[in-house]
Image (tube, rainbow over all chains, first blue to last red; front, side, top):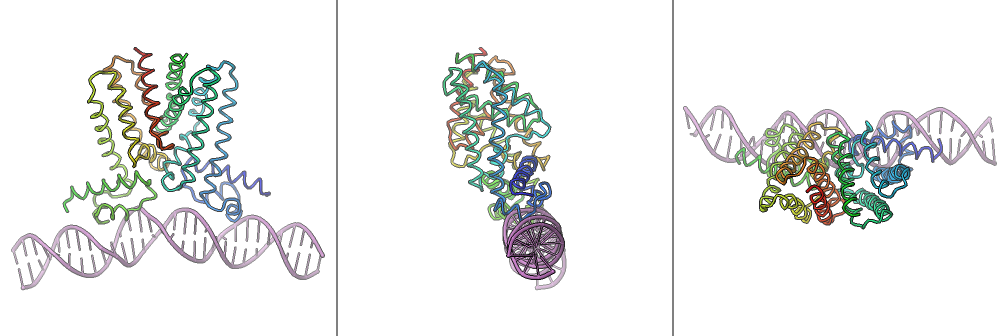
Length: 184
Length: 184
DNA sequence: CGACACGGAGAACCAGCGTTCTCTAGGCTA
DNA sequence: TAGCCTAGAGAACGCTGGTTCTCCGTGTCG
């Protein structure tokens, strides 16, 4: 198996297992078994478990935001593009594997002891805010609206995880529509 | 030391340490040292670490919501009482020890492996929703407003934890005011 | 054909930690 | 005062898991 394949499979396994069960509940041996990549190779690619964690978070940041952008891009109208964010959330929440935001979960688990993980969370949320600001600006809305939308997004992500319901996406969408109307 | 004192000191230590560092980063020996309660006594009071965790969450649920209610009760006007929730958040976020919502953090860390912790999180959020519904009803607003306010509260709690800023409380308050205006 | 570099499987090592056990000292009762 | 119950300190136990090491088979190059 070549290096690139091993890295991809390791990150796939890390993403699946760490997201599903949390970091401390998953051992490097579990990653090895799921990825089919030997421990020796794992440690050559990622010198420590923490670096495997941050690597999977960085890759996930790209794919998650690409998925969101792809969904939003199906709309033309700037206001509809903003509301499409919440439709995307609903689709996400409906997935059986949904278990909240990986960064929030890992921040709760490791934020206090791993500055690297805390920083990944900060970067991810900052990127989300940046994207929402672009959407708000395109819709001729003030920056502050994007900050408020981010709170709705994060709140919905958390509540959907804890309650196991996708309803928060609908509630957040309705609130977002109200905020949009009010800032017209 | 009598049993009641030992229990109080154990829960104090658990709340401080588990909230500050997370559960798996704190050992029972750390709890013993911080509480000044022997391991034997700890295990008499709480037969397992998980039960100590759920016990501290339950006690914290009471004290946190009492603190919120006390702050809200300083206002008479029903609309102001709703906005007071966000002033309370700002005060909370400004505390140096602030590290997000204990239930969200522990849900991220243990939710996948401990149904008891996941259930505590659900109960806590449900209680918060119930309280917001009371406030909304008193202000003559529909139930749906309370659900939307909860998203703002949760989003602010998360963002304040990750960014280390108290600004999310102000953003959430502004959004709440807009939603209040729109549902008048 | 032979030496060698590489990679994998799994053992080994070591530390941390949840939980239980042992031993001892102190106080209470008869 | 003698016996007993309690509680605490700390060791012990058993397990898990991150990280490293050993051994062996394979394929490659000279």
